[in-house]
Image 1 (cartoon, one colour):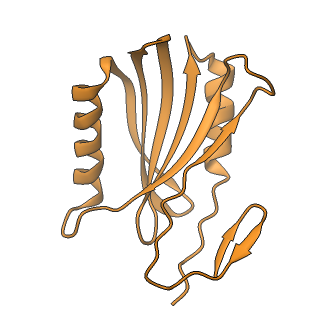
Image 2 (image 1 turned 90 degrees about the vertical axis):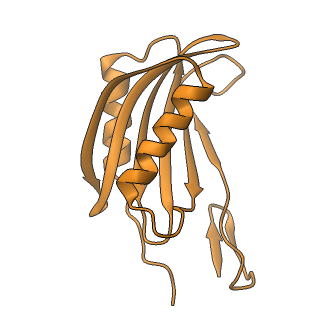
Length: 141
């Protein structure tokens, strides 16, 4: 059984969740802080920290003026996690992100807060508070 915000649907067991959830702090078309939740498979035999390092390297190669401002290991929902704060330049201008990658039970879960321009200290604190509320459930057997 696959559960989502509006309900649930019965899918074949072999199907995997590759959904992307995008939540925005603004109600209209004006730019503001957005929060995305994505899921990614960690390649077979690869350690979580290797996966995170590889993803950071991919970002540094593909994003213009990518710069890590801070990086720390932490625990989220009793799982190993890594948080990076970074900036880069998109077509629309400077972007500021706080990206938390969690070693979820069957995949990596990536929680990304993005802000055009610069994220304030209060916004960063709120993002971190939101991430701390993550409560993962073990996949059904």
